[in-house]
Amino acid sequence: MNNKVENIDNWINGHYEKPTKGLRLEKYNPHSGELISLVADSTSEDFERALMAARNAFSDWSNTSPVARGKYLFRIAEAMKDRKKILAECVAIETGKSLKDASGEVEASISQAEFFAGEGMRLFGKSLPSGVSDKYSHTVRQPLGVAALIVPANTPIANIAWKLFPALVCGNTAIVKASENAPKIANLIAEITDYVELPVGVLNIIHGQGSVVGEVIVADARINVISFTGSTNAGKRILQLASSNLTRVSLELGGKNPFVVCDDADLEQAAHWAVLSAFSNAGQRCAAGSRILVFESVYEKFMELFIGKTKNLKLGVTDECDLGPLINKSHQRRVLDAIDRSRPENEKLICGGNIPDEIELKNGYYVEPTIFADLPLNSELIKTEIFGPVVTVNAVKDFNEAIEQANSTSYGLTAAIHTKSVDRAMHFAQKIRSGVVNINLGTYGSEPHMPFGGFGDSGNGTREPGTEALDVYSELKNISFLVRKDLL
Ligand code: NAD
Image (cartoon, rainbow, N blue to C red; front, side):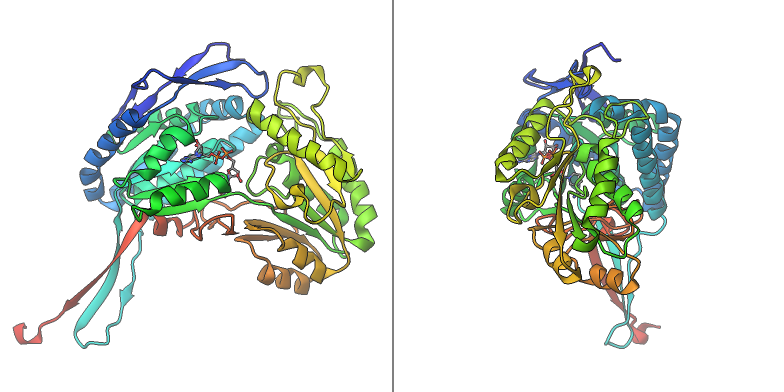
């Protein structure tokens, strides 16, 4: 247990800086409720300093060859491996995850660094034939300038990794606006970049509130690209603020992801993946499978298995636990309020719905894994992302109704179907409105080399990470030249 309250300062131009106005936010341990840090509550003055550092560093960094930039990322990956335990402990304490889950997240972030390090040797353009004889054309990728990278706390080191590494390998300098709910992990990454001697100013970290310094960052015309992961409402606000500057914006937003169980599914497997999809990370996943749609004919059998497994879940932060607390007290309140608003709709609260009563959880921001069945299709819990351990289950009469309901929200991030039929799986994959489709798996996200992103309210059409992230962080230039035969 960490009893010392730390100050978390901004990282600007290669060193820590206290917030100019001396303002601080309180960050609590989600499991124990203890105050663990006082986080810089930055203002426009702090942002200005970070921006100057990032702009000053841009010329040299963008002129460093992509291969050399990739080598810095390799060194960052190696340094992350050496500090794996420290990084995982930090993620675990700040988010309330088990050390096992936090270690998995650190591993994924290291893979992200390795993948984009390799991209330094590629950064492919295209060679294009011309309609004009003796004219030759090709495209190159060039950096944009200063990238503002704004991240949430649910998988804090992975969120930073999937933006920072492609942004840097493409030759941009960066200002990371860390999550106020997981601030320290961003500084540990900054210290690693210092250790590998990344030139100062290439990475800067600003802490503080989205509605304060976050808005200052995204509204500034000197920011050349914004990559934001967070809620749909904040994404829409950011797009508005950035639009008058025509700043490029990549939005990775919320989800209300359907999980379909067909009558030919392996129900034991389906229930296993449904529990993981709905409740891992306490449902604080954009990819959470928060809407389960089950064929009528297997509904009872599936529910028996699903409810049984849900009731067996263990809450807490040790490695034997299945889910931890929510990120902070006000989010716990929001989730409980959403549950309470659905109670009068009918009596279909199957299990959960409360703060658990175990004594060892009493100081944390826990909510029991909660299942609602057969809520009306226009219910808040079916239409809106809750970002907590709350799932709805509805029966559907057949495959067509399953697709219709699966596509009935404004989101479109991930989807899963459980079936033994190749035809159903393929048809579902083609017809579902979502950026990720998984067959006989959970509603999980991508791997470092795979594109992730969503339709509708889940994003604005960009995909990160994978090589598709290179399109977010680079400007494409088409270069043509004419061979003068008369000069040969
Ligand atoms: P949030 O939108 O409240 O905050 C995310 C980050 O944005 C924080 O750093 C915050 O300070 C900043 N921010 C908030 N409002 C801002 C504004 N107006 N201007 C600039 N910055 C602003 O989200 P959260 O509650 O921290 O995270 C949960 C949300 O993130 C969920 O909706 C979840 O689905 C989404 N999410 C999406 C993905 C994805 O890849 N699609 C991944 C993880 C989380």
